[in-house]
Length: 192
Image (cartoon, rainbow, N blue to C red; front, top):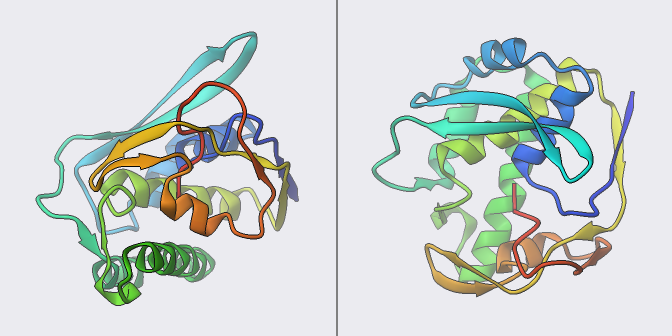
């Protein structure tokens, strides 16, 4: 199966999860499959919403117990490796987080192994990325494409202070990808 993303209003992990649920991914099955990842302290909430005249599914990762510290790239590697996720999901999760670690390392001038994931490494981002990959796997999505991505504009406040939109990690990840900025001054695309 092929999936096409229309990114007129950006893209993020929770938006991908919502789109996958809209095309048939069972939230119950997603919750069950995510249990293969050795993390806790969250729950998935799905609800139907209207974005203007368009109906959509909103998937939120509700954090019940936050982590005390950010996750390092080696910690994320161990979580993925020790999980009982399907091998395709593990392989692609490692690839996604490798790209994220490399982008964060470049932005911060550090080796990727020394990167501490703040916004990216928290539980909700792990669930977004791995949940999206599980959705692709469960729905047998083999290929995907996308329109150019609206990254937004303005500024965003993060762990490192006030940053431009797109945030530096998004800008690094977007190299070579068609992007544009249109609409309200907000962050529309996230690294996950």
